[in-house]
Length: 431
Ligand SMILES: [Fe+2]
Image (cartoon, rainbow, N blue to C red):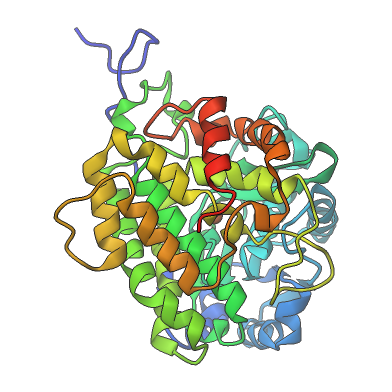
């Protein structure tokens, strides 16, 4: 009789799960934040946000919607764009001391990730590094669900409202890594396209390309049933690999990215395009929260983490950094050229979804060319060199990417260090 569970003797996974954040979407949806929190049963919350979101008045408005429901709010407004262990620690200390009943995140992926970590530490205690993915951290799993967390994203990119990860930068180790567990997924998301109205076009570009990569990498990840079956359900990874349910979400997000990103970048007042990108970010978040991302995201970690020299236009000027979406997109064309032989038909489908056109015959360059055209049209950097790296730094970048085994195992084609070096070399200049 066949073993029902993995026994290490070559059984393949037969099971996949869909765990999605319930999302409320629409112009003005954020006015219902207080109402949503009320029915989550919390009376005292920590609101996690960042100075940029405070400055444009969003935080104050949402705070008033929450207080109107009789809920006490304490604001933490020091979330850092691209959080570090130190910035997370300060927020987590505030959370622990405050003994809050729940959390609200108002901001981009950084604020939402900061709130996830605050929730984790305030619920279960311990040190942040205990929970960080190995080999960088201890990989400890939270023993039970966290306190309620409601996420209100203000950028259309990360999909952090829908995902189970919190990303952090560890400058001492020159590495970006994360905490990853199903309990980190926010309990609810409120997605209001009116909140992105003040976003500079560069931020829209980077965030939107991140959406496109989440969806493309998920759709082109190693199918869930090619993984060995886990020893126990607890060992099933949050990133399960491509599966029929994740495909639906990823496909829709690809279609939206191809159709609306150019418009959202070129005209900030195009509410339909901005709203669709914001919805696309959530759709892609659900897709990659199930299937997972791989080579471009693995390369993005060292590209963003190794050097801190790039000063992105349109972003806060307090510290140099590479915006996440741009750090991801620069290696995507070469990565998908590399993965093409593993699943030619699915690469053709992604090209078709992104271009919105029927593509009868495709080859390994079809999808990369469509991506490069999109990058050009939305003002993305030309490649890894423009972000501050030369050929002599490829070894270091490969070393950093290789640390992201959690992601690289999701590649549909096995990827060696030499393969990564080749992808990075091809990505120096995409045009
Ligand atoms: Fe991403």
